[in-house]
Figure 1 (cartoon, rainbow, N blue to C red):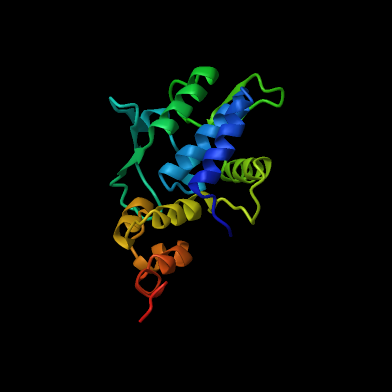
Figure 2: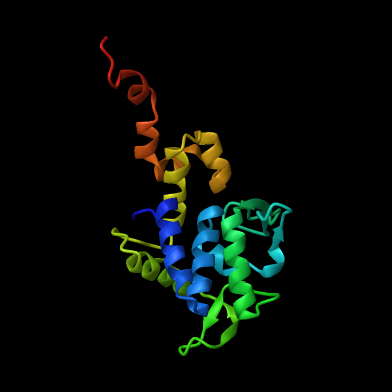
Length: 198
């Protein structure tokens, strides 16, 4: 599967939001939050309005009550960027979603918002559809947001430990598998042997 890197997520989210529709605003917020918090599609569908807290600078935190790597349900707090909180705010204002599931179905005519959370299948379709609409090539899946976020972080110089923390991975092998090419490009050979005269 291919990753949706930060620049791809930004492009797809901007394009979706520019539609000015409920569907576009929802999809923009979903893409951005999935990328910021390295969310799995099951976790995106399970986000409730009550899980989000806005900070003074416009950024926020997402309290994830449970995840695949947190079977005990201790919960984790994840950082959410200002642009993402703004996108979530635009979606909530337009949709009237004030509590409960954040990401919900929108009626075919685009005027009504359902009461229940989007299914994993629906979240996967949003990711694929919005990537295609933005002209992003590759094999997109529900995992593409996590893969792309990992690649983008490592590409910006994040360490394996930082990557593990961001993606909530317990095993370094799992974390590094997501961004193997970027890790190699940041490794000692790339840094010390490239353009070396020795």
